[in-house]
Length: 95
Image (cartoon, rainbow, N blue to C red):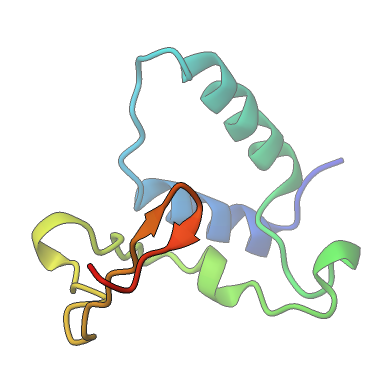
């Protein structure tokens, strides 16, 4: 079954925006997943499993990297720290 042209174009644009690793212990699994994706195309709302979900943010051609390392903001920096001490399973309020 051939994919509609719109799905083929969206898939090509999405894959072109990725930098996929070519080696490693997951290379076989990655290649199999890419083959399945090429056969089915990116999901749209017309696909049964995606009917009630808007997959447009997942299938856009623009890929935004995750915030890791220096770009990540500390999640709990503004919260006060509380330390609870338990000795042999009993709360120790003296510490």
